[in-house]
Image (spheres, rainbow, N blue to C red):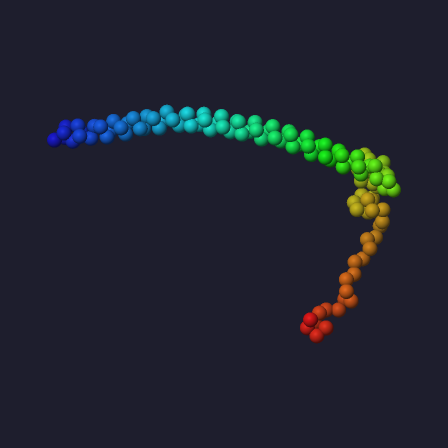
Amino acid sequence: MLRELLEAAEPALQRAAALMEAAANSKGAVLDGLAKSLERAQDAVEANLQEHLAKADSIVSDLVNEAQAVRGRRPATSAQRAGRAAPGGGEEAISGGSTPVPVTRGSGRSLKGRGGQ
C-alpha cells in the first residue's frame, strides 16, 4: 500500500525536486543580472552627472564674469578675495555697519485696542 502511494506521488515529487533545483540555480543568475543592471544604471547616471556638472560650471562662470563686469559695484576687499571674513567677522564685516537698523511696523498698538478688528 505504501509503495502504491509513493508510485502515485512520484511524478509530483520529481517536479517539486526539479523546481527546487531550478530555484537554487536561478538565484545566482538573478543576482548576476541584478548586479549587471545596477552597474549599467550607475554608468548612465555618472555619464549624465558629468554632463550636468559641466553645464552648471559654465553657467556659474558666465554669471561670475557678468557680475564682475557690472559698473559701479564696490570692489571686493582683500579679505573677501581670499575667502575670509574681514576683521570683526560676521555680518558686521560684510555690511560695514556696527548697529543694525531697527525695523518698525505699524503703530505698535494691538488689534484689541481697535475695536476687535
